Length: 186
Image 1 (cartoon, helix red, strand yellow):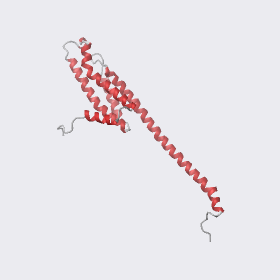
Image 2 (cartoon, helix red, strand yellow):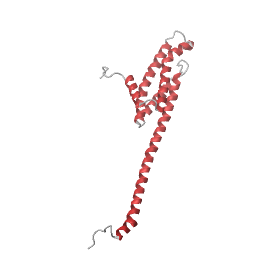
Image 3 (cartoon, helix red, strand yellow):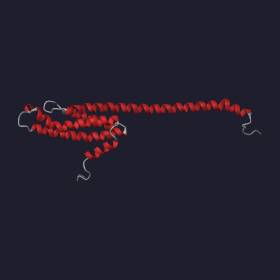
Image 4 (cartoon, one colour):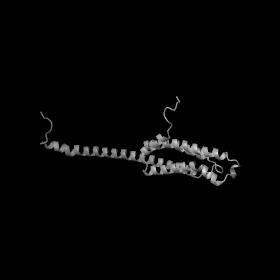
């Protein structure tokens, strides 16, 4: 009766050197290759998402740049607002948690910017003379809050992209801009 091969048996070492070591090396190599592939795939997906985020943020900054100096008397601004709102909506759909946080902030900032711009336009429309006769300094001073808002958003997004603005600052701004809880609406 023969029992299991002992380590003293040369056949055992032949089996180990001829079959088990090469088979183990193949299995380990395959596992390493699979793990590397999976890591590369995740890294590649993250890079694509980051590229998509950065491209969209650049488009948002370009849209906001229009509002830094818009003259609503002589420039059409409605299509720019629609484009900006669409870009912000898309920003909210990106899968990265930090990007969605920025999107939530931009929704509230967009509402504030719309209020500031609308208030300025209503004020300019109440000017006693024809719109084209409104003095430039009146237009500039009336639009200043809207222009400042757009510049603030551009600088905040750029700072966030550089990593200078932390998520906590974004959360604080969201809290600041959010309507109070318990406003009587149920």
